[in-house]
Structure formats: C-alpha cells, structure tokens
Length: 466
Image (cartoon, rainbow, N blue to C red):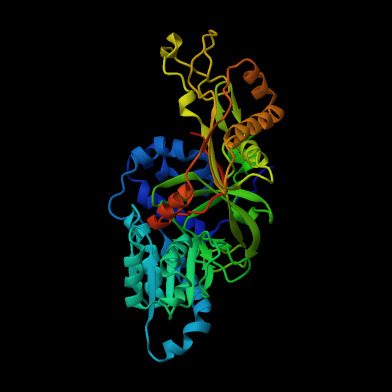
C-alpha cells in the first residue's frame, strides 16, 4: 500500500522547524543532513526508521543539545487545560467560586530532559493549580501524610498504579484520607480498578524521551487519548507491513490511519528523537476534528500491549504468543490458580566452554542460523532451554512443577515441528520450571509503581527475549 503525499500541515512543519533548530547544528545534524531538509518528505527519505537499539547506536552518541531542548508541548497546552477543566468543573466549581485555589498532587519521577520534566508542572500551572510534587514513593506512608497535609483536589501520575499503592496504605478509598479529592489523572494503566470514588481519566501522554505524544480526550473510551500532532512529528507503522521489510512505504501519516487498525508509534522531536520506533502500540478508535494548529482529522487511540517477543534458542526462535499460550494451557482446573509467570531463555542452559569456531566472525548471529557456524562446528551462542518462573495461589502438589514442565514441553512439541526435531535430537532441554515465593510478582509490581516513571501493569504471562 503506497502512502499518499503528506498534506502541508502547519503543525508538523513547525515541529520540523523546531527539530532542525534544535538538532541541525551539531554532529547529529551534519550526519543526517538535517539542515538540508526541504520538508517532511525529505525527513522520511534521509532518516531511516530506527528501533531503540539502532537509535541508541546511531543517534544518541551524536546527540549534543546546547541548552534545554524545546519539547514543543506548549503548542497544545491550552487544549489539555480545557479538557481538564471540563472534568473538574462539576466538582470544584463551588470551591473555586469561593476563591479557594485548586491544589494538585503531581506524583512523577524526574525526567532526564528538564524540558520534558517540566511539561506536567507547566500544564498544572496553566490550569491555575498549586502543585505539590512527589518524585518517588519509597515510603508511601510518608508520601500519604504529605498529601493529607496538602489537601489536594486533583492527583496526577504517569501510572494509575501509584494511586493503588497509596490506597493500600490508606487501607481503603483515597477519600478516606483525602476528603477533597475529586479527580485522578494518569497516562498508563487507566483500566486499573481503584477503590477511590473520584473519577479516573486519561491525562494524555508525556513520553520521558519525546515529550508530549497524547492529549486528553473528553470522548469515549475513557482510556483513550488524541495524538498530539502539533507537539511532535508522529508516524504510524503497521506491524504487519514491518515484517515484510517495507518500513519506508508502510509508515503512514496519522490522518491516513484506518479506524480499528493497530499501529506502532514512530516519533521525531527536538528532544533528540529521529524517526524512533517507540515500541508503543495503539489502536485507532476514532478521529477528533481539526484545529487551527492541526488542520486535518486527528486520530483518537487506545494504548495496546506490545506483542510478545520471540524467544531465541539454539537453532530456532519460538514465537512469544505461542509460549504464553503454552504456559496458560498447562494449567488444569484442579491446579492452583496462576498469579503470574515469566518465560525467558534459561541462562543455565548456555554452555560455558566456547567453541573453537567462536573466535571467527559469524555473519548469521542475528538469524535462525545464529547458533551454528557455516563450517558445521556448533557454537553455543544461544540458550538450549526455557526458564519459566511461576507464582501460584493455593497449595501445589509435590509433582506439580514436574507435570507443568511436561505439559509445556508437550504443547510446544505439538506447536513447533522445529522444536520437536531439536528435542528429539537432544539439542534442546525441557523447560526448567521455578515456583517463586508467594507475593514475588506483587513485590516487583509495587517497586515499579513506586518509581513513578512509566506504565506498571502487564500481562499475566510475560515473555522476555533475554
């Protein structure tokens, strides 16, 4: 599918001007010819799509920002504040009429870029709120006491998990300790069920690296947001087209998106992102009307979990979705309930002794032949088995771990002829099952929630490629 020539969008053109002004004068600008860009088509022609690893290797070492970056978030701040005021109007109208200032608690870690770090505070300042900022929740009880003394009517955090963490220490709804609380705003985990009676809405999205990527939307669904197309240059990459190696042709401008389709966000901004594939996936659920800044329909999206990565083993790669399905299918009705699980290559199955051929260049290291040299001498570059960590609720029988391993192994034998062949040749080991102590995954969840920097919730069965 060919991409139509992009519209001459003032919002995107201004984003490009900011990017060139910010990055064009240094070594990064010279390497990618940013000063010679004649427009958005030149950007797409001169800068390839870069995943996180390629971006870190090719862009980050050349990045040399003189002074604070221009995150571009001010362009759409008025729209953010307008939506927030709409949600607050029914709850704080009486107190505002009495002259009582709105107090907002901002639970957010420090960002690496000061310009990105200041976006949320500047948004709340434009709202007219007095702000109390908490940078972490190492001591939730102390943080809750500070909020009680501050008496906020609004709480803002990157993840709604921070509110759940506070509720655990409040031993009930947040209103029990914060009676003036009227609204909760979060960028991630908005589907999380809280005890608080205050409404939970999507605050939009401020990415730690790229700046503002999403605007809050008053339209359903509640967890949706509108792409911030005047703050950063955003492209949409269909994952299916990416596998065919047609990234350049497949990257769409957002106004050409199809409702119901799934896309990966590609971002370029003056904070140091050049056509960076963010690894964040969204589904388009509708379009918001054009504005003076963005004179074309703007996609309204909901965030989707990233697809499970393939797990590389010696001689093959197992699709992450199949691994997650195998773990789930291994549980029987009489077994203890599955709380959470992780699947990854087993580090104990990697041979310690290097092959004599390992010192020679292996041009197949990133392919399915990565575990074997062209000479036929085997190189143990990859694990030969899986490591499955499982937490269950309930009493497990003595043979539960062994039976779970056999069930996962049998399911993979049915799903993958390559896996079955290598297992028959004894080149792969059966999965190693580890039952982790009760509460281990909850402890990791709590630690992530207290960092106040990103999303926390994830799938019950997580597949990790390393």
